[in-house]
Image (cartoon, rainbow, N blue to C red):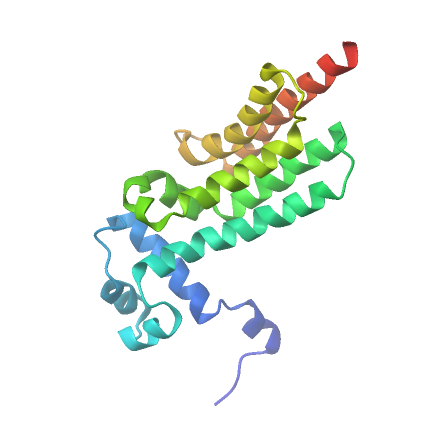
Length: 197
């Protein structure tokens, strides 16, 4: 038996990642509540026992999505904590958050459209906590309400435009760039108003 070259093996998703990818596709297609572990195992071509090795329940799979997102946002926040709180840092925070959203689009769409089913997982609080942490890096506690709201809107614009905006002929990249420009414009407005006051 010939093994795949090392580079090809390294690029292949792990079993755990394959389970997550398959689960998110089935959750999106059939809904979280209507998808069973058996269906996930069948789609993967593995036994339920093999699936149980990685995830004991469907809830464990869903929780793993949030954990991955949270880790990525935490990395951005750690970077932001180590930088000056200036326009350049805040602009880069938005760029990095847009990249996190891009890498988690299926999960964020799943979360958006299955909120009722996910309330018992207490993972929505993970999402909200991360947004609040990012928001704190885009504002100062003494900022006027309008600046704090603009910073909040900058974050939610990136998320909501990418996840819920009706798709037309626009590419994902065009949508990302336009949303990012809008978000950066909000932060630049805050900065400009602070500079003139």
